[in-house]
Image (cartoon, rainbow, N blue to C red; front, side, top):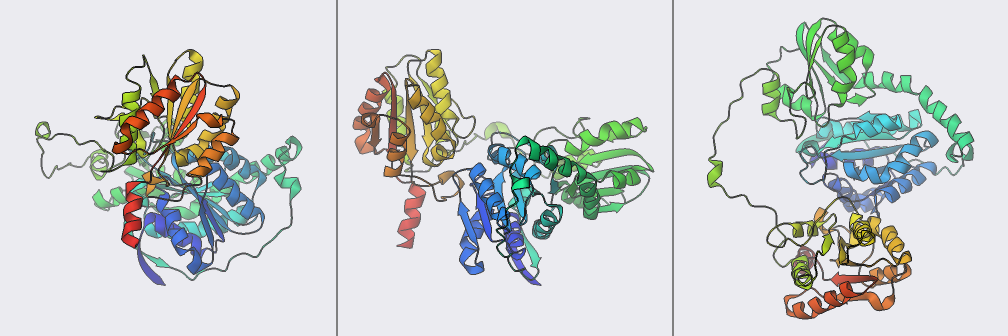
Length: 524
């Protein structure tokens, strides 16, 4: 056994390597980014292909294609990224797979770097696939190795669900010997993979028939200590907090796989009269057990009962409180004397100079609406910039501006990053060009995916200009500016001119991310 100290994300990546993957695909998104960062850094050493994709849907489809060719493939993303990949993900459960296909999803309770707290276990249940939930880095590694075996055995994708605390906790793990990669298998299975209604009905029936086997498999991933009186059912990261605060006397059932092992749950609760359910994320387990257990006269407490807050991460303190233990606060802070410090752009960030120019350019406009998007530039919504008015989802700025212009807004502006534009802004811009929408789109080209650490972007510089022209934007209304303080007056005039144009215009604000320039300078 080899021992290494790694992040939970990196442990998962090593599990995939040692399980014999050939390919890995992803779109960066915290807290999942380090999985593929690690694989890209190690790809030559282990002879694998690993790359960043335009978005989560293209990543999932590439992984599925590799699986159809017989190879093992990993696809990773954050929880909101699964919304983007959902079409391919849902249908892959029906089409089935050939080479093992594992989907690693990192959820973000407390929204440390996300728009919502959604729980990916619902997606696994929705698609009717198998899902594993590790409690630490060692289980991230072991469960990922096992997930590939299960995927090939069951003929479906398998999900490994992380949360931020697991993804970003560093621990020592033990590794096993690396498995050889699968051989290429180009035999086509058109009668399974072509999801015309006739085939899809047959395939869906096969998927339904596997469900009892999936539940049976989930019993392999439990740990049980029986008892009487009050017991605890816990999953994932919640297990760590329970073990930390419990005296060792409380009956507990550790659940690490879904579908829920219902027969084992019934066995565990048989002599109990009260069950506390601890889980990080939504009350997924609690919702599925509450009615059944309460109907048999047992009390069920958790997020739905108000014992644990519905939002935010589970913590050792909230776990203690749920178990009726004293919660000691080691020190108190007089918060009224502490001034909050919101996040802010880096010193020298090109987005700041762009927003300063934009703010001045729209001063003369009545009721100008500036729609933002997902990226570092979302910080432009905060003081002192106050430059953008929305942040909904990847690529939304384009359609929000288009919709506002259709509704009658005379100055509708979208602000989007280069990577986000390629991710999901391009179809919206094609639509705006086709409809000759009266709006301006500003693409912030900083030559990288900056918010998640500086990953490769699919298009930048002249490539963005060609894409915009190819989507139907008039060439004379595609402008490139350099967001520097010395060019402020010039940039203000360009923005003024384009937002006053009665039609669609695109401004590309091109200047490299300051952090990327620092890295390049350091390398030199």
